[in-house]
Image 1 (cartoon, rainbow, N blue to C red):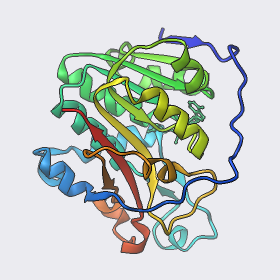
Image 2: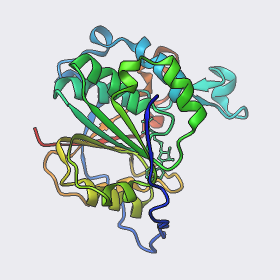
Image 3: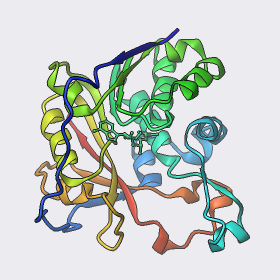
Length: 261
Ligand SMILES: C[S@@+](CC[C@H](N)C(=O)[O-])C[C@H]1O[C@@H](n2cnc3c(N)ncnc32)[C@H](O)[C@@H]1O
């Protein structure tokens, strides 16, 4: 019904945590997602159907709050973890007429299917998503719930990015790096993808210097990349009305875009 390839038995490498990873500098050009979308000719209020992202997010990304947290009491049990990434991916694909998209790290599919929605509207394309942990039952449910035309564009590659990337030299218009977020793994993904994107490369989970989360070291690597186009797009979940209780301090991470067009 859909295209899944399992290559996970090819190698069993583990990423060791290096003793010294470069420090984060936070020295990066920054732009708020609203401003970035505006520069691409898109107004969140007028041009984006937030409901489309909410519906997709409901099936592929929604998370549950910790019942002991303040927001669980004051706002509710569920939240949208960075649904803005989908709005950004969708807009970039439409704007740059992206025909091929490689995603490292499928998760539950939000990035993939926001890309599929945009590519379908563009007239079609090809999506490869790589993840060692696909859940067959979840994919089966999505294959029934989502349009067939979206599914037929996607190849699900079961395994680690390193294994997939070392087996071919294919290039893509747009590469989205959102798999293993440790320093070593992000470094490998970058090294194996830096010559493979024709138009755009986007990293997820760049944390501003104050935000510390175990095994999320993408910023340590991204701060080392020398590229004049590099820009941090600060994600702001307050795009969605019922997340407007967040304080400025909690808006502390984003995605980093490199552009060749
Ligand atoms: C944050 S989720 C991805 C979210 C998804 N990109 C989205 O936008 O909805 C990270 C995923 O990366 C996967 N992952 C972990 N290590 C990986 C690796 N070495 N190669 C590819 N994917 C990996 C995990 O299984 C997990 O599903």
